[in-house]
Length: 377
Image 1 (cartoon, rainbow, N blue to C red):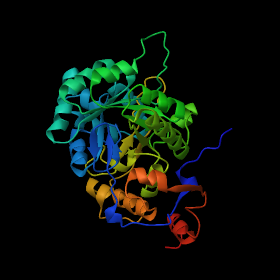
Image 2 (cartoon, helix red, strand yellow):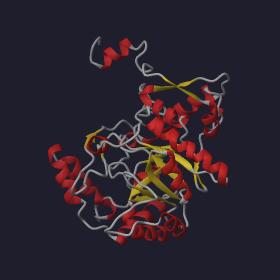
Image 3 (tube, helix red, strand yellow):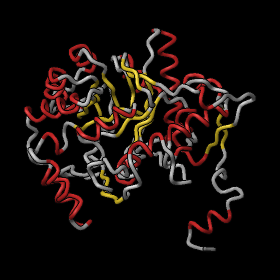
């Protein structure tokens, strides 16, 4: 069996030369759309609504809105969200299964995208391959800038005797806007998606804080190894075609160090859920749940209380009011890259070195560990 690594098992080695963090450029892009910050907010109802998307865009990031969520099923999604966060934990799954039975309404899809566009930023929306033939054209015609084709696991070679699989190449051609595809964890699948026309590839199966896919299905690859696999495919694809496809590590990151390690592993940007669910602007009001949770037959998620940590600006740009790496994430990236002598993210891929270091978070931290357990106050 092959050994795979997660964020807590590796560390970034500082470089032989360093640069001023203020000189570091952390811009990234998807297709021809440039982002000031390499952050995407996950397509989850507790994280992204049109108002959150506008706020995220103004700060330089990108929020992905789920077209199969409550925003496109209900005229007043805020009331539905309040109901979800108010019920006891043991009632959440049945309630969500009932809530998501409500049909998706085409007019709400278009209306939601137009709300996002009014803020002046890019509108990015997401749905599963099952509904892409219907929701893709509606989104494009409503003005969406980026479309995210997302499932727990996506492949180019899907087989079904009940339905006609989505032809990825044809879908990309018909959309005429950048299409992100995911999720995947291997070189081969990442290469397949790039060859199908993906402008971005989402990496990660089951690492999210609110996702129980790994516990229910037993599938997944730790994020450092998964990111390296897909980044290797990106580099080889670029050598063959000259077209750069963005690798987006999706899930499993809780602090700035994890994000820096994802980028050092080869990611161009990261997608975060629970981190942004903690923002006061998030529609879940301190609660977060996976979008596979309402599945009618095999739920794969849970509702968790993450609390409200601060404003979106504090989380992204600071100034940080915490010392645990959960705020000023952009600052953490710049300082980590500067410590490796990298002026931009692509240089970080080349200049950073990762080592296996399972003790990196424990070494010399006896007092911090004791206090985290409530000892030595």
